[in-house]
Image 1 (cartoon, rainbow, N blue to C red):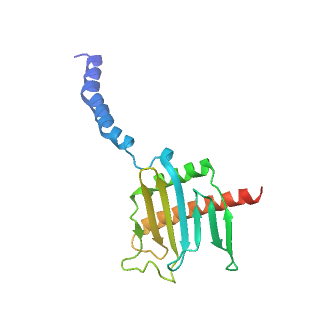
Image 2 (cartoon, one colour):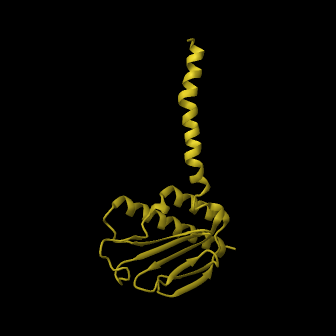
Length: 169
């Protein structure tokens, strides 16, 4: 068999079946992906201690309220730009938010504790939503804690940047 014939045989027996397998295996996953950026509806972000989380943000309405340094409740309206939403969606995808457990807390932790800071973030899509409750004292899986902290900081920074843009207008 000639060299050209060997290359063709190799391509037909290894490369082509592998490509077919990839297309058959991954196409349904991509089509049925539950969290697509085009289906994004809203983002809700809450934080604080205790049962009632006073600090909240809802991207669908733009309502943003938080306690400032003097414990005064500040209420404002802040809208995230499309770029901000796409950025948060892509970062959530990159960090694996969709695979996070619904509650990131130490075993037996009290989710309504008055002593431990709690964050809740929820990404709402047309067909599904993903809500994560993150307790800041979590220490069981350090890598999961680091990724949850990173996601929390990204969301907070995006909201604060949007607030600065609105206040400078």
